[in-house]
Image (spheres, rainbow, N blue to C red):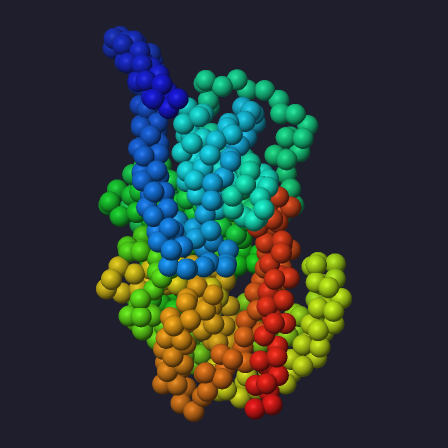
Length: 508
């Protein structure tokens, strides 16, 4: 147990201090001082992780309470979990996980920890997994990645297996060779995220520590791991100033350069975005200041009226700066149409769509040019999109709202951001949001018809997410595919379900 490990570290420190040599042998004295410093470092690390375990348990309890409140209010989160600048998002579909952890330290394998129960169901949420594994191992650990998960609803609940790396060599567990199946599961894989390896974890944390020191906010305690999965890793970093920072890691191959996107939005409205402390675009690393407040999973009418017009104003201003938007990933309506056409022949193999559904989708593709012309006629400009503008990515302290998580940002039609909150709001709240959004765009684009744009863009909204989820699948390792396996087909079916409304709009 961790308490025993703490006691062992304390006894070790006392033993080292008791062996202090006299000053007649400078070499022996220098060696003793080095040994004492190492013993102090180990004791400090164990103490911090013991404290973090208690803090993680308290935060998990708060998240469970928020999730229960959302469930009772009928809230529904249909999306993947977001990578947030703040505490882990409330998990509206949360259920227990039964967790097993394969533990390594460098090249050594220390067997499996568990199984044990973890109350928050989302596989990507690992703070409680880290706490339980740290307790079982007797040394601090971090989760490298998901090894396998089995559940009726992939992505949460069920039986889940992780690979974790010990930060100190375990002393109470024997090491040995893994069996062939385990060795294969823990071995290299194509498309593995950089932060999903022990070396990558250490490199990312070392980068964050160096960057914090460079801005005068040195790390005050070890990072606390909050989330890890194929889309991102998220760590909370206590600093010497008392204000925490956050390290976010993403894959540059299919994500936006968040530091650059935040700078673009911030050039128009600095209060809309989190503060970037450091960014390394080639590695997908981002260091952010903590954003105080709560995530707005059930936003008030006042919050909607405050944050939505600010996003619209920023997007309208940035639309007039096309040179600044030239490097963005292109997800404009015509780019989406071209991507669908290029992918049509592969959908039979990549999805479980029926022949009839595939035929209807081909019909939709043939009709797309007309839809795009009608959408362009609504008079809204293509601009910088947040890309995942749901209320869980809004964070408010009661005086203002900050929008976080820009990894899906791109160049596109603003109606896609306008439609994003719909799946998270009840009908009355959605109608209020739609009114606020359309009125804001009418002010910034006189003569436009944003309400009609919302209606016409709905099939494109589902198409954009179908293509985005497929992009995930094309760039992640096999063990991570259960997170997104059925998502492209689900979005394409949603697209087909809204086609009759589109045809009616086209005749109007």
